[in-house]
Amino acid sequence: MKILVTVKRIPDPDESLKFAGNAIDTSSSKWVANAFDEYAVETALRMAEHIGNKDRLAEVIVCSVCPKDKRQHVTQFLAMGADRGVIVDADETAMDSQTVAKLVAEVFRREGCDLLVSGKLSQDSEGNEVAQRAAGLLDLPQASFAATLRWDRGANALTVGREVDDGVETKTIPLPAVVSVDLRIVLPHSVKNGATADDHKYSDGARLASLRGITMAKRKKVDVHTPAALGVTPSSHVAVAGVTAPEKRAAGQIVDSAQTLVNKLITEAKVL
Amino acid sequence: MSNVLVIVESDGSGPKAAALPGITAGQQLAAATGGQLHLLVLGASPDAAAQALASGGYGASAVHAIAGAELEPFTAEAWTDAVVAAVRELGVTAFGGTASSTLREVVPRAAAVLDAPIVTEITGVTGADAFTREISAGRAIATLKVSHAPFGFTARASDFAPAEPGSPATTVSALSAGSVSRRGATVVGVEKTQSARPALTEADVVVSGGRGMREGANFKVLEELTDLLGGALGASRAATDAGMVPADLQVGQTGKVVAPNLYFAVAISGAIQHLAGMKGSKTIVAINKDPEAPIFQVADYGLVAKWEDAVPQLVELVRAHKGG
Ligand SMILES: Cc1cc2nc3c(=O)[nH]c(=O)nc-3n(C[C@H](O)[C@H](O)[C@H](O)COP(=O)(O)OP(=O)(O)OC[C@H]3O[C@@H](n4cnc5c(N)ncnc54)[C@H](O)[C@@H]3O)c2cc1C
Image 1 (tube, chains in turn cyan, yellow):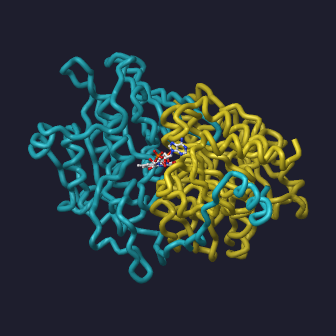
Image 2 (spheres, rainbow over the protein chains, first blue to last red):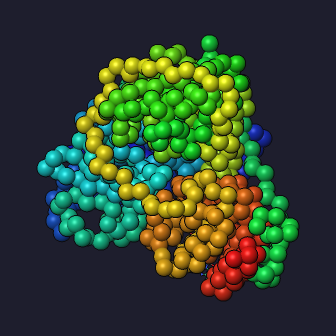
Image 3 (cartoon, each protein chain N blue to C red):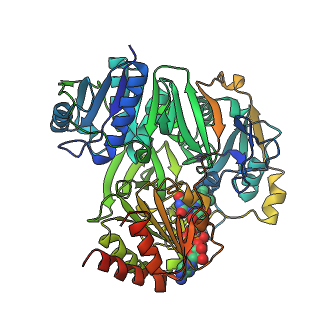
């Protein structure tokens, strides 16, 4: 079993945005890993490991489209426990998500992977496209917005609890397949692989890299491809014509009691 | 020809309420391109819903129905086959609809097969090829220009008014999707959150609780307030992750985006990811015991208090006002 996980770097979402002219100025941003990709890697690791045993049930490969000298996030995921990395050396900010999906799909094909796991969206551009696109390009079944996942190794299939608008849909997909993960995939009991005890309680959230992991990461293999070597010509059919700050809400008021609040909602805001 | 195709999710007899904002976005886009609006209904027996759309008009020139047993229950795999076939057959310039969990799965997949770009979660149509959308948890608004046909779109429900029937009736034509397949996927079932309340994204009033509510049972008092106001219940991620309320009540960057007339944030700190889902609300009320909580910076009315004291009082005052 080979699991490919897409990972992306983004400007630190906890820093305040700087606007320059008609764009966001990221020249002095700290770049960090997209949180949903941390959840995706955590998902793959929970699938791959057999808690209490040394055997691994899957190889976890992280794949990023980024300039090859900007691979801090890839190293971070190797330190977290991924087995190796694949970098597609390109300026990901200059291509649209179809190009990114083509590159990811091609890596998936060449590596002969069984499963693609992606975060459901990236916190900066919020496209929510790459996993679904890769599934379309690879013509594979997909389960987006996964909150729970059970790997049935006997049936070579996944049963995924998907967060949909009006509840949770349970969908079973045969492997090979594509999954995008939502926030709750990293709750303590969300991922089951049939080997680790079903009642095993993971700690909440994505794991942190251990010191040993950080040392090991430097020795793990990272292949670097160019888009040309993968047979993909980068393009972009969606251009950002401008970025502006949203209008600020007018300053509000602090009221002194529930009574005042209700009075104001009735007479001032006229919403009751 | 630069026609626009909107995929309309149906409830069996007509359009789902959640699909109506997507039709409005399609109307605006068709007006901008000078083309026609076409509507598409998919399902095992889509005819009744298609007929309802056709007699309501909805500003459309034509309604298309694709029938197939494989199309129900919904899977992205089978729906993509049908959408791709319709886009090719009709030669439309744009295809999409409301940014529901359904279309957020289908539109990107179909776009990939069509080698097409998409604009997701648009908040406005500013031209035949130009759109606005929020990025970075609502802290910036991007204007996008698309340079390829066809292209896909999904429209944020809170930014487009629901389309209304009443325009001249049109006709239904059946389309063939060719081969439609679920690629081996099976939908075991959907566990729906049962509620007599209006849908979160359609409600006039939303009452949300956060981590400070501490446990699910404490939401009872918020539910009382919600029901007095005929509203919907919401929550922060901290409250949904802790299992206090179902996950589909989450408001925010990764949950629902709501823009009601009146939004209550109770025991919610106001993280940017939460604000991304509610800052378009008309009037925002925040109740929090911490006067420094960031939620007060976006609130029209802030009450620094413990919910244990403030909310029961609020319930009594609102009940008295409503004359109950
Ligand atoms: C990738 C990503 C996506 C996210 N998406 C979302 C999202 O979609 N929606 C979302 O909500 N969050 C989201 N978050 C989480 C977000 O960052 C915050 O962690 C979350 O919103 C905090 O929820 P909260 O305000 O309920 O909890 P806290 O931040 O812990 O705040 C609790 C508040 O309750 C107050 N309080 C406590 N006790 C009382 C009392 N007795 N009476 C009154 N007030 C009280 C406290 O003063 C505090 O302000 C996301 C985070 C990440 C990283």
